[in-house]
Image (cartoon, rainbow, N blue to C red):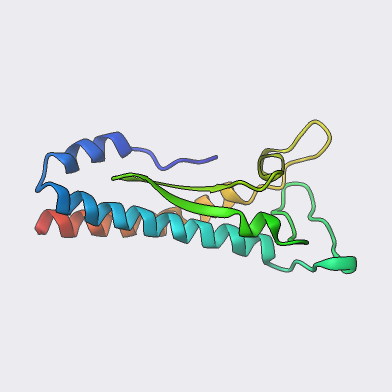
Length: 135
């Protein structure tokens, strides 16, 4: 799954600035960015999906088509540190869909959501850093 790089360098720089207020502001922006990615992943799953007896599975390489709603409702965002936020799914088959198995091709949704929203999230965090620096 794609990751946004440079976290360690930015974390060290922010920790050396004005202190806790800067870290909190940027941390909130990181969490908001993770929420943007979570929402996009949920959107990719529900886009064009039909539940119940008319459900049609997605094609290999395409995001999974929602059927029961379990995958979508198990996508979560967590603040895992002052300057770290994560988006994950704890649905029992989340990883199998994202990366595939020996019997099923991948139906990725988290990676594509991250790639689609990367620029928006980077700009959001950059704006928070700039505001914090200008303080």
